[in-house]
Image (cartoon, rainbow, N blue to C red; front, top):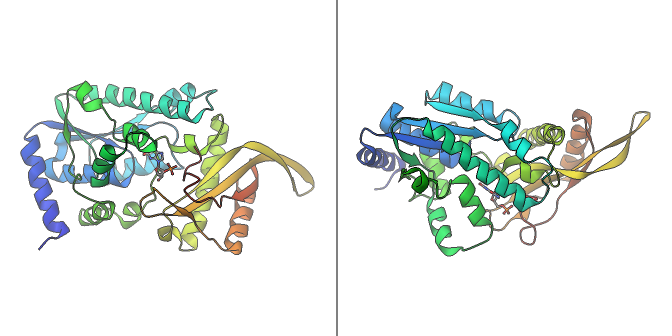
Length: 319
Ligand code: XMP
């Protein structure tokens, strides 16, 4: 008779047994997996856990504040908020090649994480929200994007380099089971049901050169789009939805004047595991209402397009 409640108790017992009275570091991304891992480990060992949240300046609107409010204020989990946005954005200046972007972010991420982790005295363990499919994938794929995903989000190679042992309490679970466990641990449903968000963040939704100005515009447009999706009750039907700001400005007309602003693309897909995906069939009404709202509410955008590419041949993200 297998229930999530029993799984939770067993997982807590195992964590206590593995960790003893030692300290554990957990990298928080704001995503569901690392969040569930952190809350579970906190239930098991309390203040022996310290979380590190690296803010690379490529997060969505209010995202850093929400993560801090949830973990530090609500759960009382010791949390280091590493605001390193200047470091990342400066390093990314002038970079437009997608692979160079990813590598730049991935490398800095590891450096920064390591710097903060080194300040936590007596840490012997590193916690990761690795899931069962991650375990399988890292065996069956020897190239392609999954490697990038792993090396970024699960800080690959870092435990050995830092002399830390791994704690991976979600290793036997699939995504839906992680959500059930999160529910069992009392995480809010709105948090458990969040769309996936890539480690490199908004960098890969801003094709071409990343500027602070473009990121600001992108954040605002994305917030309006997600608000529209929630208002229409579509959020849970969609695997992932976001705006990409395009590296092109086009002419428009507004009021009496001519505008010359950025174009953006809306993306929304359904998927089971992110490996293949179909674009979401919004109604024309939804699309026009959303386009109107974005153009009216977001200064810097005067044209909205909808991406109707499935995966394959497209990827979900734009880079
Ligand atoms: P693509 O764009 O490859 O994305 O179709 C498939 C899924 O993976 C996410 N993704 C990433 N997640 N680090 C991550 O943690 C990454 O570097 C990364 N790249 C893509 C993407 O958001 C989608 O859910």
